[in-house]
Length: 142
Length: 142
Image (cartoon, rainbow over all chains, first blue to last red; front, side, top):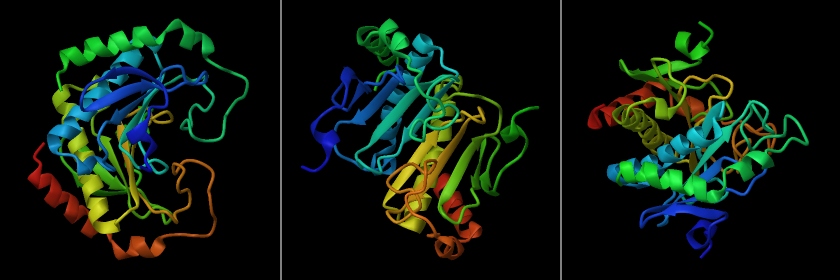
């Protein structure tokens, strides 16, 4: 009903529970790019209770930890924007100094062309990333 | 020593405690734009303890609540990027459908020119925004 994130996922599901799901964004430019999506519909973090905010952020921080462990990024970017799709979701992106847009955000004009990280993506298959998330989130119950 | 956010603030300080500070980013395009800056030096959220992460996010969510109350935005954007200045800081930005970049992130190429929200900025002086934050954060102790 008008919200694409209520209805479908734009990537492989790495982990999910009844509250939220974590998908891997298909991108050769950004092999370590996850999206944490609230299952129910809400627009803003302050539409959630304090406990729900903390629960969603625990999933975001588990993504950050898994991406740091597996991709050794120069920086991690976290963002909840939703201007185009106003359904709560967080972008969690491993950034490298030689990636397409560094040091700009990933959404801007490319800083350099023709450089992909497809090799890094292949080196960390979805199953490995999902297993790392599962371990981290089991330690940090919702 | 090399980190500008360890040494100075790029805006008016609206609120601070011993853990973090909240500044208003000077921008006519984005009158409701705050930055939440960790006082000590750390690069990533997962460099903080769980309690510290929750404390920093409480300040971020207080900004979101204050901006919603005072600017009635179409969407709030939250982001911790730090590619250029790798010292933990959060952007909290009230977005309006007629702002310079909507629906893109604020860091991209402008969608439209010559439209500023200087009037909205003047209508909500720093003192009012700071008072709203003080009230919200007093309800939500660190």
